[in-house]
Image (tube, rainbow, N blue to C red):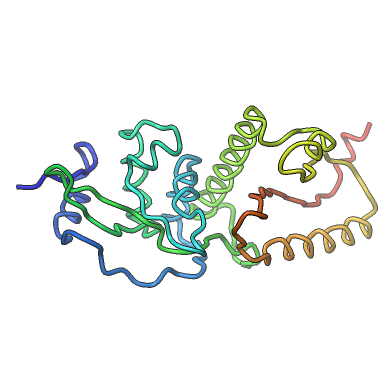
Length: 239
């Protein structure tokens, strides 16, 4: 009898689900074009930088062709122990962010292959009912925080590997010859000027998000994380 290449003990529900699946490619629906995350359970599943790394790895080039990968392949790509990833994959699977795409019999063991369930995902920042006192919004903050941590971990990796550079001029002098731009700052400016800047910034982000998912020799992988927000100044801290 074939053994399942399943998670360690403690995942009986997952093993039962996989036992009901036939060997070979699974009958899956078309990928969702964009999944809008609004429920607390899915936000909680994404409130971990490693799980966001798994989603990004599986979602790479998804607009061209969905990647189908085993836990072992994901572990090798992310530089993580295989056993560490099973629990995280289980949580992503439970909320439908990933799916079992295929079961293969390898050396008497059934090997699971996974894919994402959507081409893109995110939250709707224009939603009028975000209540930061709710559990749902606490999970939202956790998801955003995990995304920030994951982003800066990748940025540190890129800097240490010499794939990018802090200094703009240095980034222009080395492959891929694209200027690195960034700032972490806070200061006061006229309200009208802040509103004008925010509108220009919003338009630029919309333009960036609207770019086609290009592939080929003359393309580069770009990374962007940005937040711009205004608050009333704290007069007591102005000295």
